[in-house]
Length: 130
Image (cartoon, rainbow, N blue to C red; front, side):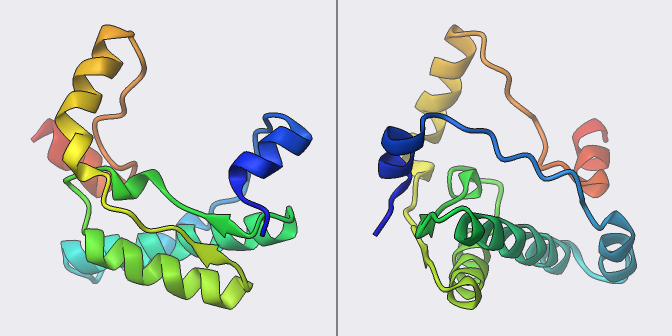
């Protein structure tokens, strides 16, 4: 099994940048849904793409920073991550990282690291400013 650590040791750090995001499809599907189902749709779309990209890159396991945020629907993230992994033929690493959430914020602020204060969708951004 090629873990991320093994991949990085073998190939060095790499940024995988996916320039396509099917925002039209997301809006078409998300606009008629309640918040929790919009989030689930977003998890499904993003984790599916992540799993496919990982599999094509030769990585056998992936995870997501969504498992760190206390503002995300943890169970949905795990379910959609596992479905995406199964479809791509790889594994999904699911661990509840939320217990370190508060300390992580303090450490990142102390180190002047960028912290995005919303998940990235326009609904979340609107909530952030409301």
